[in-house]
Image (cartoon, rainbow, N blue to C red; front, side):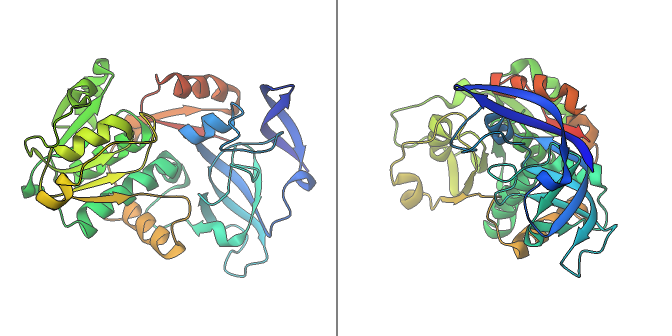
Length: 327
């Protein structure tokens, strides 16, 4: 059986994007075959599509770290044909053929049955970005016990996929969100999705001061670098920060002062190898009591034919919100 696949090829260090016809027999030898309805575009997908060997070692390769669709066949008796499912994380789309194709084969251990209350389309508007945002909020709200009355929550990289969904989730849960962005032309977008206030990222520029006035009850940081350094210094007593991204830098400087003078907690967030138990809990929350209204406000829907332009947009830092890939 033939189907369409978005394939990245390498020739003498030059990486090209093509839409090809692939045969089912060319998929990995895993135990679960899924007909894909939707995928999504994340920064990691853009890197994989551009030949970043830190994400994908070998080419040709089909990216797409997210997929949602219907089981065709599986050796796992709990995954009956016709069951709606989603796949995110693990090695999917990195070194294992990913979601930018009409069929995928993955280990059944990677597959999450679609939670009641979510459609396949909604699950991919969330995708890895939404899952990461929800884990961040979970660590802030549930583990960190930060309450709305404790004060404002800072969300960095707020126009991106993780930042946008985090802003919407926090708004739904009753928090005041201060959105940080370098794209002040997107102020209206950020206010529409739930931010109470928008500040330019320059307000979090690096400073030599060991501490700043405690302003924020929490920080959901999606960019890393100096912005995270400065945000930690501006947390209130018992403030909580989460870190999940590195677009502004893979390292940051900090003294022990925020931690020993204000009792600040910093949680790392990973959505790739999170346990299936925790993964299921977070997806259930996104489908039920944390389900946000107005997901279409952050939605850009494209086909495989339109995907390459959106990849360039993400790499250039001009994309806003979530990109849904309709298969």
